[in-house]
Length: 156
Image (cartoon, rainbow, N blue to C red):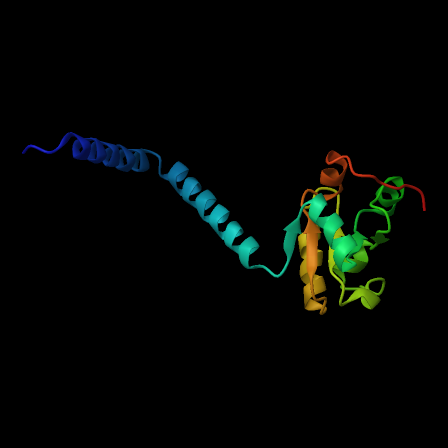
């Protein structure tokens, strides 16, 4: 049976994939899980009420929409360096949905800042459940702010 050259290459490649999967089932399953996690993470970020923003977008939200920056890092880190006019929100209180410091800003955009941008998502979910209208997370946390060379204030 004579097949075109391009079709032969595709058949050989498919046979190699099948052979690889047969010889390495655990690696194949891990690969599929990773692909699934990447795709589901992308969909979550696209359709989530909580948006990740960069330092420039933070600045625009503060200047144009009177956004409130809530820093959820430990008090010591907050005192050592923070975004100007940010409010310190204890992570412990925030995890318990105690948002007394932010209650008067419910209709303003709220931007959460943590050290690296990783711990803010759970607190952001609590904020949206508590009725805050627009919640954002600074992607990369205070480290992204520092990397962009933007100013910080220190002290109490």
